[in-house]
Image (cartoon, rainbow, N blue to C red; front, side, top):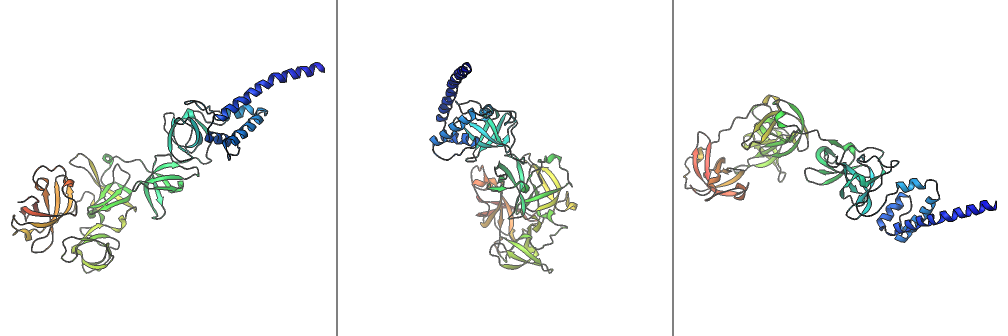
Length: 450
């Protein structure tokens, strides 16, 4: 019995220095950690994270002594993140981490931040398919690209996220009860997403039920006249409305392709421009009703006052169904290549108008026939092109305004590189008539003198 006691005592004396060395190593390791790193370590061991640095070190030391005496000591040591010199890799543990490169979007991880030589908590946002991952730090949502071998899985969400950062999506906007294009910015720890709207760049938080992936963009050369698509109305201009059918670019719906027949049948909600009495420029208005006698009740968009207008003084801008954001069925009218080699897509609401063009209305230029080329007239720039500007001019003795082209060489003396540097749409300018073709309905103007 005495011999057994002596042998046990000698064995304990041999083990004790080893244990003391391990405790000393831990104390040295803890003291070299930053406050953030200590808090991360405490979180891993389910310890409180409040208090000063000394309090956190004391808790970790107590936990370490308990681990040393517990059967699971080896497993805890393996699953703990190790903070060391720069570029030191985090050891992955098969029991708690996926195989290298197998992290999923939404995984909460501990990731090595090389710039600070520290480990922080983050959420995986995208697999870059090159061994690295786009992550966002949970502390401030900043994005960072981290190598997979410098990350350790902390928790995987119960429900696998459907979308990754950068995905192009359509999102439901409750206030408008409509879907709009957007881009996924990040997956949030709460299980929702932060998206960025294409239109204004504003951010919004949505659940996955209000998000759907956009279909792949269709090449224009594969589209055929008469094909039917479900699209979404975008911006409207005086020359038509653009519609997104998920092709390489939006298609243009010109006013002529918005209605059956040769003349529009105005209805409530249609957007029009209307000439008011003898004023030369039209005003935008909204149709209230067709009176059936060649007139329509309209409301001026600016001011909201009602007005009765002759249909002959009205021009359709867009039908009510093409309000921005509305879904609409359209047909491919044509795909054409412009002078610069770019393909353009044109659409129609009316299948019978595929391949058809409106007849050009002849402009009555007779009131300008007696105007001398030396006479200056007031005009308003209506549109700009690379080769000149279209300018609306009122006859000097009154009547309907007519539009003529002022070629880029007639804007001023000298070389003009860019029309937008010279004039702007809506600008009032002085012009003279360079040439006039009354039968052909063409008028050439000059801003530098005739």
